[in-house]
Image (cartoon, rainbow, N blue to C red; front, side, top):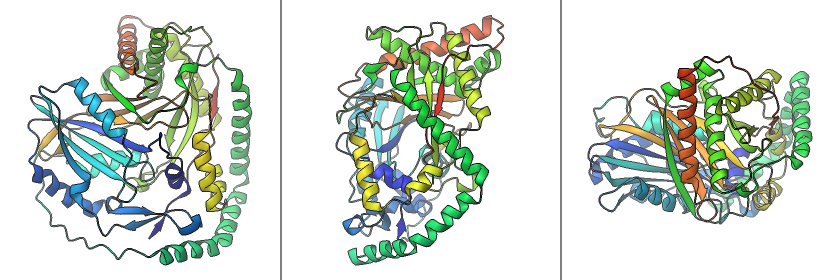
Amino acid sequence: MQTMSTLDSLFLHVENDVSHMHLGAVALFEGAPPAAGELAAVLAGKLELLSRYRQRVRLVPWGLGRPVWVEDPHFELAYHLRHVALPRPGGAEELRRLVGRIMAQPLDRGRSLWEMWVIEGVSEDRWGVICKLHHCMVDGISAGDLLLGVLLDPQAGAPASVPDRWQPQPEPSNASVLAHALSELASGPGRHLREARALLGAPRHTARQAITIAAGVSSLRGLVGASTARSLNGPLSAERQWVQARARLADVKTIRHRLGGTVNDVLLAAVSGGFRALLLHRGEPVPAELIVRTLVPLSLRTEDARGIPDNRVTALFAELPVGVEDPVERLHAITIELDALKRSGQAGGGTLTQLSGLAPAPLFALGAAGLARLPQRRVQTVTTNVPGPQHPLYLCGRRMLELFPYVPLALEVRIGVAICSYDGTLGFGITGDGKHATDIPTLADGIQHELARLLQRATTTRLTPRGRPSRRLTLVAAVSE
C-alpha cells in the first residue's frame, strides 16, 4: 500500500465529468500489425517492470487521508489491451476522430488507470497504438520514460516472451486502508515539523521562493486587464477533438542556430504563430498587444528519478506575442522573456506543494474539486514539450515511425498543445474541446506554416538576434513534491 503524493492526488481530485485527467500518446508503426496474442505476450513480459500498471486507486474512508495505490487482485491484461480497426482505406482524418472518441472517455477508477489500443488500418502499411495513462500515475516525462524506455525496444528483434509469475497481494480491507491513513496522520506532526525545519534550514532558498511566489501573485493581479484572446476560454464539454502536426528537429535547430534562442523558444514561437492563424481564422481582432497566455510545465525530475511513476513538475506562465506580425520578431520576443526568467532564478522549487501537504486531506480534496469548477480567464492554453530518444524504437519487431502526445484539458482551457521529439522528428498533438474548438486543424496548419516561414528566413537572411522586452513572463507557484 502506497500513499499518493499531494500533486498526484491533485490530478485525481480535479477530474470531473468534463475534464478527464489522462495523458496519452499516439504512436505509428511500419508494416502489418502484430497478431492479437503477440503484443499481449510482449506486454505481459514487461509488466514486471511496470508495477503501477497492476495497481488501482483506493480512497481512504471518509477522506481521512490521500488516496493509496494497492495491487488489483482482479487485474486482467485483456481489459486494458484493446483492438480496433479504422474503416478502409484508413487515413489521417479517421485516426483523428478515433483518438478524439477514445480520449473523451474516462478511465475506469475501479481498475488500473491505463489503456492501450492497437489500431489496424491506419494506412496500407501502417498501424498504430493509442496509450492512455491517468495523470495521477505519471507526468509527461515519466510517461515518456515508461513508454519509450520500457515498453519499446532499441532493436528490431522482438524479445523472447517472459512468463508472467505475478501473484497479487490480498486486497486490503477498508479498515486496513483507514488504519494506514491514521498511522500517517499520527506521524504527521513530526513529518510536518521536519518539513518546516527543512524550509527554515535553507533561509535564503525559502526567502527566494517566498519572493517568487509573491511576485507571481502580484503579477497575476496585474494580468487581469491584459489583452488576451477570450475565445480560448470557457466552459468545457466532455467531447474531445485531436489533431497532429509534424516538424523536423533538424529544421528547428537550424532556426535556433541562425535566428537565436533555444529549441523551446522556437517551438513556442511556432505555437504563437499557430494561435495567431487560429484567431485570424475566427475573425477575431488581433491587435499588436494581444497575447495568448500559456502554462508551460517544467520537469523537476532528476536522473535518479527517471522512470518512477509519479509527478515532479513545476510550471510557469509565458505570454505568447500573437499580436506581433513578423515571425522572427515573435521568436526574439519569446527568447528575451524566457532568458530573463532563467536569469532571475525563478523557475524552480516546490514550496507551495510542500505547504499544501499540511492541509487536512478532506479539505485538500474539496479544494481541488472546487478549483476544477472555478471559471478562469487568465490562462488560455497549455504547452508542454517532452524530449524523446533520437534513435529508432521497436514494438514487436516493428519500427515506430512517429509519436504524437495528448494533453488533457481542464480549468476552462479549451485547447492544449503537447510536443514530443523522437528520432529526428517532432510530433505536435493538439487537444481541443469537441464542441467549442472544432477548428484546431487551423492551429495545426498554422504551427507548420510558422516553422516553414522561420526556416525560410533562417536560411536566406543573416540576422542578429534582437527583440524588445515588451511582454512579461510570470512564474506560477511550483507544484512539485
